[in-house]
Length: 164
Length: 417
Image (cartoon, helix red, strand yellow):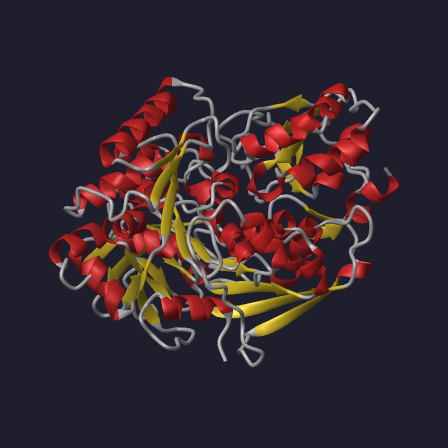
């Protein structure tokens, strides 16, 4: 699985209210959530993002609420992966369950700048920045990789009822 | 040599013992959803090819974050939740005349020591105050949990927070957890269980222990835990219909670390914008002007919280430049506060008393802050924009500090009120 796009770096402590503010929790349509992605920190984000782009963060990405609206909004805004130095645990699970990779990469927010082009090879565990610099991310645990490969937990359970 | 959390996960996954880092598939005892995450959770379950919840007595929906509905979008969501509850034959359903999920769930007897509970709300960790393992999950995990009765968990390490000594007057359990946030940091307990021990915790009523466990998530915690005791059992008596076996940590249980807190020397604490770990003693922040004071939420909307606010505000008036919103966390709290004259005291002082809901806490219901405004709140999060405009500010504090500040219009040390 290959991801290629531009990076949007928002630094440390990108919380779930930044990713999707509380006022939008009443929404149930993923496309509409996508139109408000990152509105709490960058109101113009949904106009700028292109399919395949990635979000870059520092420490504790996704802290706060259990709202799955947050990774749903990112996914439906076109974001293909998040690359951060660390994650809050509920966000990490929610994103993986949706099939949206949450990759853990030391120094990501220092090594990757907004506007850089990144190529992520999920199977190789590498991130190539601007075609020159290669970073590696912490291997995704096998069980989580199976969920990602299935396209998310819904598909995983649908296809693996006996094993669940 | 196991902690409460390890023992509960072991007992629910068919193991004699489990260790931090292991992944286990565990049987769930109860699952609940606020309206805002319920519909998404059911869509997830249906997408998994599952039509019905695994046990209609062990799954519930609560309409709490926005109550009553404020627009057509959320009234349609409430309607959808009511229809889902009927279609699914859920034996328990809590409409807008109930309150905040984390207050209603224990009051209605759904929590007991030794159980494994999941909720589609991050503050589900609150229920660890009853000696349960309770953790917040997203909608897809909830779809799996309520559809199959099972979910996978990584066994967390446990961090102990040990508080000793009698809290000084008008210093509350909220001040302990804010101090803990300062010491450990907003990611200091990521994927850990936080176990609260010591004489200060044993002296607390269960409501005050709920405040401690409630904010475990603000430090990244998977859950908060307090070992059960007679106070727990007395609260649960007449509410819980299940037989249960309390679980306690072994004396030689392994903790990642222990944070010691001197309860007797603790001052009131305030978390300053825009991070829960940006905590200072109230004396360092005193004098900061505020526009709105909120007393409520799953952190501090209980009877004892309303009581302390009423004691401080009795016979006085809120500052003319401040609006005060007091929201009891549940109808049981509302009713008790009303019977005891607490509601009248707050109203006489000039507070707006709202019906039970999540109220001001999450910025999606009412009490929204305008650009440039400052809110002082007894809730649990002060992210930029949390309670309204991204140009507003939120300070977090105890109900005592909130009430004292309501009278002066500036952040005020409650020990002087």
